[in-house]
Length: 362
Ligand code: PEP
Ligand code: MN
Image (cartoon, rainbow, N blue to C red; front, side, top):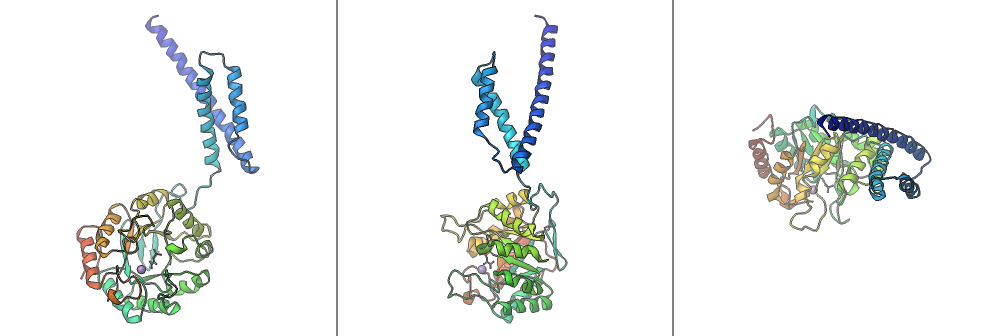
């Protein structure tokens, strides 16, 4: 055999490869057609009886040089690829998915953009307790150049005997404070019937961890024209979290901020376990802004700063943290809220370390 023979044989192989490629692609197209029929008829994609029939056919037709088992193995790979093609076609691409929209969603509240690459800090008390308490925090927060104040008016508490929040009165306080201090306000709503009323008082509506799978609340939140900050459920997977956001978006409201707030694990050193890698995963899988709540995830004041740094370093669009004028007497989450001085140090450290840019530093 000389060099030119080898050249010819290899050229033949290349030609056969091309033919195989064409045939496998044609097969793929046929499989897609079959998939459409199966979809329309609600049939299962994988049919073991049909698969067995095809393998038997390969065995009957095989004349060597390859073993039947080798041939069947190769064909099984082709069958598997076809099945994956059918499943991809059948699977609906979610509206919140990056596959649906490659650009980041940017949400504008009172002239502040969320998700534009410039990270934000949302701070405020766990609960709105009085006008004075809320105004004192608003003063500290806005003085440091922050644009969004938080404060709970409807508090979902573990015990029904604990402070449940001031309800609508709390929302009125937030609205008044937002006008006086020129900031946007965010608060949690727990009942679908309250959403429309709340939209008159708030700039962002929060749906809390305990309600992440309250589908009626999610659907109603999807029908209003107001940004929604959706927190991850206590034991929700990332996939469940994304589907909850989809519930909102499927009803027409695409102004959604995702907020990782820690999940329940066996670890007791922190209140919850901050799933820090959820941030880049959510950023990759969806086009929505992603925040990290460092207060509820850690439940520890000494971890607020490192957790916030980690969140911003890994790509979060912002951080949420709780601040109270006198945490020792706070009506909820007294152990982990920062006082105003601690909050100022917290903010300054984030700015000095280059994680945050704030305009009105005092
Ligand atoms: C809150 O932010 O006030 C709150 C109750 O948080 P979560 O829903 O994450 O527990
Ligand atoms: Mn709290």
